[in-house]
Image (cartoon, rainbow, N blue to C red; front, side, top):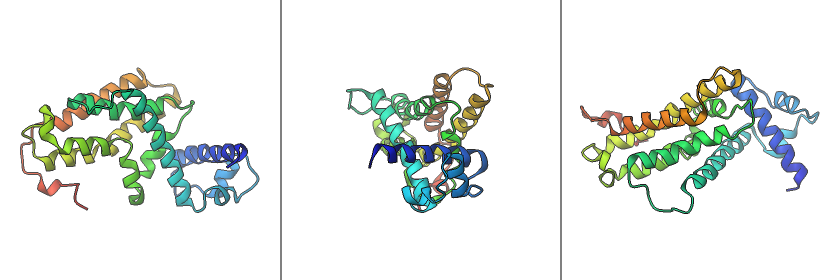
Amino acid sequence: MGRHSDKAREVLLNAAEELFARHGIDAVSNRKITEHAGTANHSAIKYHFGAKDDLLRAMVQRAVDDVRVCREKLVGDDSADPTSLRELVTVHTLALIHSFDALPRPSWRAQFLFQVRLRPEFTEMLAGLISEGIQRRAAASDTLEELKGIPEVVVSSRARILGPMVLGLCAEYEALVNEGEQRGSWESMGYFVVDAVVGMLAAPSTAPADFMDFTQK
């Protein structure tokens, strides 16, 4: 694909991200996206992406790819598995936060992802942002000292709900940043989220949780 075509795709992705974040996915037509992107070709979405779901998939994949890059920077040359729950959560959570922080201002990525989370067909892709890695590693809870004694179904189900929780916090903070009303920074907010996630995963289990098994589909 040529450089001009790549640039055109990026402009459309950015326009769609903003409009979906501000108005909701179902309220925005392909025509509105192309107009916001500044192109007179109202079939540009179909040409570059296909159907609307294909556009959404490209947008989510872009987010997942950006998080992966940030995660690789955090891990560096150390490919060893984290030895503590905090290390595990920090790598996966801060990678997401850093990907939002790296975006130009104003940014709409977190608010868009919080919108698209409601579409079941994107659940698996969105899991790659944060919860999948934590859920996979935390499922072997006997290897992390902080999780010993907590039933695996509890750990896995808690990990499964991380995505919506963290995305909600990030979407709210992103909106404050756009309005210039935020306190602190994305980095400090990220460590707040790390503390919250670690606390939730490692909290004592006080009742049977088989009815809360979100790992079953």
